Length: 308
Image (cartoon, rainbow, N blue to C red; front, side, top):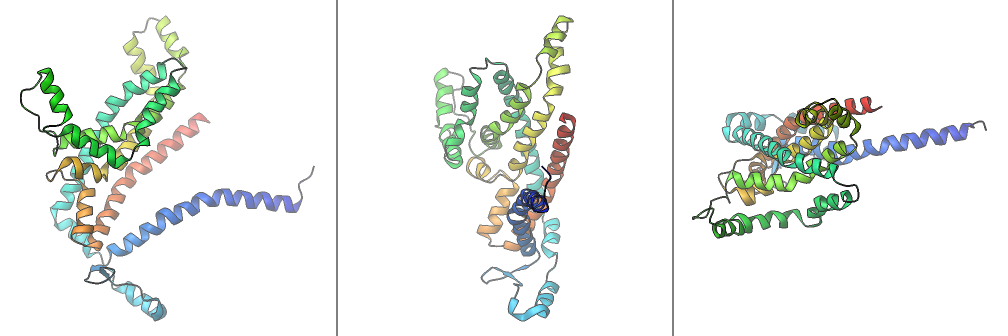
């Protein structure tokens, strides 16, 4: 049956709607909030409501709009370069996030590999066990680690009962506690994409390698690991990107000595009520994260092209 003009129009409108929904989502929930934060970052702190100036006066018309624009400046970004607190916070956040991501990969890879090689009847149960912690509030789970890691906590009591240690270990309020919290909280984000890559791998390749006399460790490094790289990359970015801006874990488990940019931003915003500087910190943090995000999107696109 030949398609009429009305049918073509409906098809075209349907395509525009399908394509327009994600762009609308991006506009409403990413670009609009970003431009609001960016606008505040160009303002100056003031004792007012809101606590910054200038504020657009729409009743003044176009001339008032232009005059307000002329008052914006980059003084807050210059301030970030002059105070080393912010750069130390950025560097510390990236180092902690990178180290935690590496530890999460070392813990999560054997877990995902074991799940992918388990009997098929067990896999749904194992997947549910990985997702199960998400059924509890993130904040409650982090609070639970305080009871485990503090000096008189469950971990120290257990180790002293075993006779491994004679004095309680100081773990809480150190970077070690932050690493434990990040690895625990973000482990499922690495395991799930990695499991998806390993689970669909063609096992006949390993059987062929075994038949040709290839040792198991060599078959793993030359076949299994390269084929699982899309899952490794996706999982690492899903851990690294939120870990850089993490605030709850360093605040509750890291104590005053742990320096991370999310914590610094929170202090500027709530304690100092310096919205312009805290907005500038957030914009720079986003720019730092754009690099791995763009690389991640590029890698996903290359993977999709290879799969097609």
